[in-house]
Image: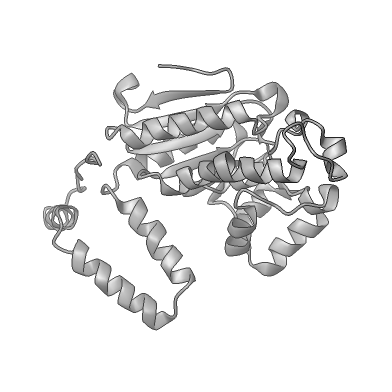
Length: 285
């Protein structure tokens, strides 16, 4: 398997290397895993591998070192001093235009890759999730935070820019407007336990148990029917923009398609036989 100094992927499961859980690890630990272009490109490559490999049924995204991800690689934003004054870069674009174009072409697509992956995604957040790293940490389906982890949004109070990579979308939905505004404007660090208490993450776990717990959670999710995570995401997204009447209609129409499908029939059969259901793996395409 190809590897990169910044990111690696392993397989886990009952059968060792043939396991059905992918573990992707950010490993630029000396710099706390900033979102430089090479890291983002490699991460998108690995997510594409997960998407295409139908033997994989869940993904864990985590990192090494003291930080999960500290966001943008500010050291790579050449000419930042001139760009901060609106000056043009070597290619004639302002630093702001260059940044926005890079986000459209790469960073935003990375977040959408995670949100659209056909398998459940567990984000295991070790240490700091700062700046755009918060968006990355919250882009999965289930977030587990190590007890030492924290979330930090320096965008507005330190840099005068808005939170990005979906951060505003994720935190407002999970925490509500008051807490989202407070975190965005005050720049206070939100500790892992409080993040769990507030509902930003699924759970706070001891540091030494983080990866084990994440893999155990992924193993549970891997037993879901193929397509279950896509249905859950779509149903909740639809609910967020719908009236109760519209959502009731949506649910009924999804049942029209799903009730009687192989997964439903296996679930009913397993219920009648008093056993755990065994669902078929993902199919190509």
